Image 1 (cartoon, rainbow, N blue to C red):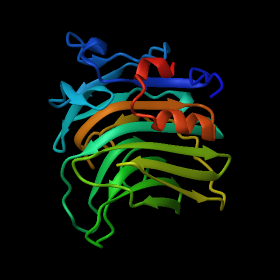
Image 2: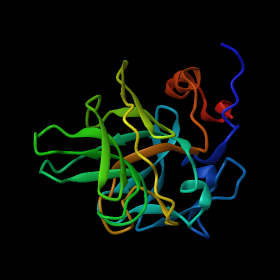
Image 3: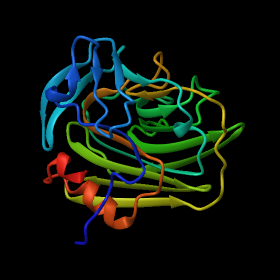
Image 4: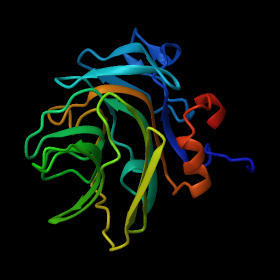
Length: 234
């Protein structure tokens, strides 16, 4: 494998290791070097074991993290989001959502979201959703098992969406090439909730990142390699 440089375009990177947690300020340090530290709310607990180091535990009730309004999250034509998470429980009912990432606000204001969702079928699935006005595009991926860590990469490239999920040795990629534009309204970026009031994540999170460019297939391969130490990715 040739040398990769995920630092290129990296805007935020959280490992949720105890060493990156500042208990005095209740923030997780941004390892990208850009100072976008993640302010925790509720009772997020740190130091939980995971396949790639340590993880933070979100209780699905009121735990979440937030980054202040920043143009890098809304004034863009391309981006990538990636995470290593474990969903521990999920209420199976139509409209139920557990949010990993969300940029935007309430149900009618969100712009993009990465979550576990249920359409009423009784089988929770991962979703990558972009909403622009009354238009919504959703990529679904059923490569999910409760209680099992999953590695997720979602990319947006000038209207086109890609969703790449690896779990239990299985990998599945879905795409949507019908264009949808991002709104440019300044809003906050949330981790583990939709907007601090809805769609709380119930489970563990051991890695979360956001890049202002589309990561390559080779880089997605590397992100999915959960045996590699996360520090080496940078």
